[in-house]
Image 1 (tube, protein in one colour):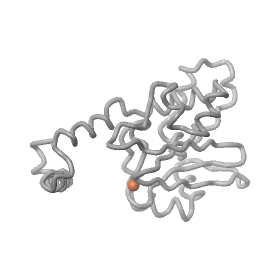
Image 2 (image 1 turned 180 degrees about the horizontal axis):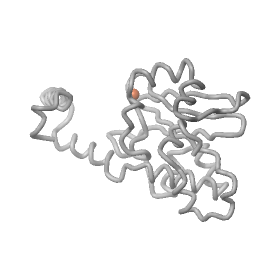
Image 3 (image 1 turned 45 degrees about the horizontal axis):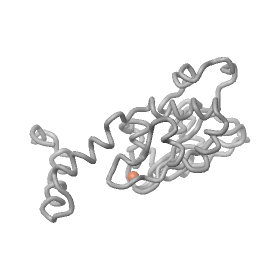
Image 4 (image 1 turned 30 degrees about the horizontal axis):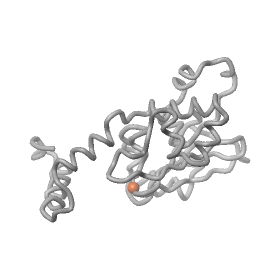
Amino acid sequence: MSGEHTSNPVAARVRRLEERLIAAGHVTDDELDAILSGVLNGASPLNGARIAARAWTDPGFRERLLDDANGALPEVGLSMAGGLQEQRLKVVANTPDRHNVLVCTLCSCYPVALLGPSPSWYKSEAYRSRVVREPRAVLAEFGLDLPPGREITVWDSSAESRYLVLPQRPSGTEDLPEDQLAALVTREGLIGTALV
Ligand code: FE
């Protein structure tokens, strides 16, 4: 957390905010570094993909995951406890009748530990405002044309609560092992802007 932000106005603003928090005694530089590395170490959409593949192959895990995601994540070696306090995770499962999609209307909250850094469109004003009002049209712009009868639920994340979409297992994958299933799952599928 040093150097090279003179040419980057956002980084400079972040650093000024950090310095004010440190000066006010809310946090130390070392604590900030520990939080950031805790959040970012190993943060990757591969984690979310592993969760989905396990849920597809292990009905017991799927049930525990949908019931209490924070409690189920350690079964696949993951947790939401990377930051200062553990974030609440709710996993929402797509079904033939219902499609789920994630947003943070206030800012850009996102399950970074499970999906890696968020894509820029997720943070855009256009996505954040429009996906709530006209989710079907926004998903169509992502190339996802849902059948008219399929309901869409938009989940609005917050500082304390994060969501993850469990896509439907694609047909014709009955014989695939868990690691090959995980390779089918994309970050967009776990956000809900793609089917898998
Ligand atoms: Fe946010």
